[in-house]
Amino acid sequence: LKELDYFKAGLQLRKNADVLSALAEQGIKPDYQLYNTAFIKWAVNQKLGVTPGVQCRDGPFGKKQLYEIYLCVDKDAKSFIDCPVLPNLSCPAEVLFHPFHTWMLNTTSAANIVMPTETVLA
Image 1 (cartoon, rainbow, N blue to C red):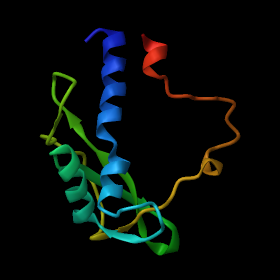
Image 2: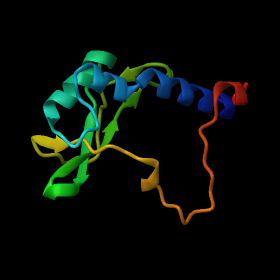
Image 3: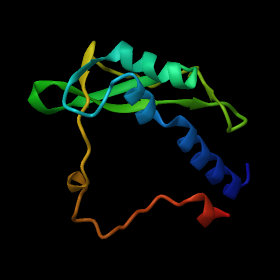
């Protein structure tokens, strides 16, 4: 893809993925509750038709928290596929889904990063 098409495809994929919606539809919300890792994968699979990779990190209360959800994209840059290879991911059977608040951002940075919209790229 050309550079502009690459970024447009990335924005469209981000919109299509809507992982938070996929989780919310199955009652998985960022509410400090413990959720079954297999159920998180299943919830994403129900929405997108592919099984994601799930990465966890140390979280509050001595628990592991949901950190990243990996999705792979076909060469056409339009469709999600089951990942042929994933990095070495680590998650226990149950993970904490920690809410995100803007106050958690590093306020020492002078950067003001804003996701571009399709109208900006048009």
